[in-house]
Length: 296
Image (cartoon, one colour):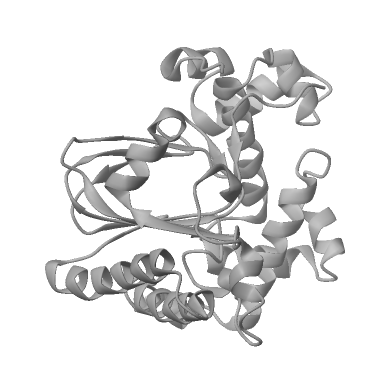
């Protein structure tokens, strides 16, 4: 079946310094000026993205969830998420992105996916900083952009160190204390493994017991981990990933509802329509009318 129409951008699609194509950084006005022709329309990335807004306003839509852009907004996006933004003319801030290997290969005992905002697609992609926090975080962003543009000796090694400090600072204000107390590293790792398995198999494998078997644990134990980590049942986590992909395809592809049903592993399209309506409150056609069909 033909691929989806929403574009997927690699770091190579953006201007970068030197020979390192696994990292990019810029002020947001410069980024917008250079790449407005394609970043203002819905698109995906193959990399992790982090942006701080220090001035202006707008709307940032990420996988059908709309977030207000205000000074102090920090957005953290996973590879593969569909997003678009509408920003005011006075928008200002900083943006950078990198692939997984750029960070992980530089740290023996640390991984980018271990940070709370990157540990699960279920987690909120936004932090709102107060004025005091903004001043400290903005210094980190500014230094990263300056180092990237300066092309100094061992510049990317320094950038990796600056990223680690920034991600630690952001993590401290991200995860509520009461949520940290409920989770442990083993449960977080198991929840992350479940998400990886679902991401690779959700079109063909849809039952909790199948994922429990793949993870060598009981269905009851897996469900308990999901409740603690996501506040959802395993069935809900699986279904939410399927429905998200259905929404993406309904709005951003040229596929018919029947084709989407088949692509997502449903033999009976009427059953797919019932599942979609149960999870969203809309039929697929109602959802398309509400968001509009966006072909590229």
